[in-house]
Image (cartoon, rainbow, N blue to C red; front, side, top):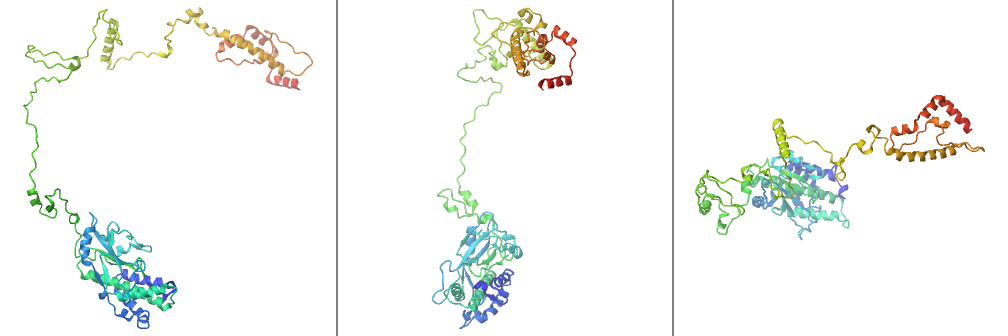
Length: 497
């Protein structure tokens, strides 16, 4: 029914929106005056609302618990994030199970929500900047409170608020017959009570001492009519400054039972005076200074103790090769009966001379002489040293291709001739006359085409020339006129037809 109600020339939602904008623009007095004029026809003995509505003032609203805000905010302050805004949110009485008493009285139930600049930069915003945090979906900081409790309470308008809640329950109940006037009275009365609470909070801020700059807003997110508007901004309240972080930090934790009474003390000098002096470090006694010219031999299980120079006549024993920096060399000559350990090679005089030459090259050019590269993969270590090809085969070096490969390829060439004869017989035209046999060594007309056999993987070009190009074949080619390509194609066509 409320959605169909019209108040003046506006619908129900447009009317409530107009009142909310007056509250956000800090025109609370104008909103109250406008609503009071609209309420007059609905208040009285015969109306849905009592006549006391027309007598209510903003001064009748009392905000209890305001003096507790200072301590509560200090409890919630965080390092670098003190409380910079509070929201007074009016709850829906039906949602929390509250209803007017027998006399029809009910105090509004409100929650106090505490916010920091982590939710919105309240400490830097004036009213216009704070208005940018509102949208049709709600406030930007909605749901980002650090804590919500019952620190504050609204008193003084229990009769008016109880009458509005009772009228709203009857309008919302379809079993109870109501008129359009009842719905209009409920919308106007609920807006008037919300504006009264807004004005009461504003008067309290002006009257009470604020502990710090603080943004304060009143919201009815879950209750009808759902107004949400700022009452004051942090720039409006300049009676105090935001406490520094040092004042917000908790007192230090005592370190022992004897110092428990120091936790609440601020006299740091007195505390430091009672502290015991620091203990001196237990250091070993100083030793005699070391002689920089003294020779110290490192001790170890495998080393002999150092020998005093007086016992050796002033001559120091020679250091081992590893400590003196010299490279130990094997003796030039070794007794025959004294064999070297396994893995060592006996160096000859020629090897030592070669080493000396390498050292000279290294000194002359600045780098060590590189040995000649040897392809170890080309050496068969199980065979005797290779000799020349001529010594092994008894043939001249230029006749290397005519080796045992000739014998291996001749058998393949002979078998290929047999296969070639069979192919010629298959391709020959059908005839009653017996096919002419071609003996080995005879040349046929097809031999002029020079159909070379496919060479084996080990047959060379020189071997093929020796087998196919002979003196007889060259003489025969010179005597017979060679047919052209057209003649051969025409002859094949006649033969096949």
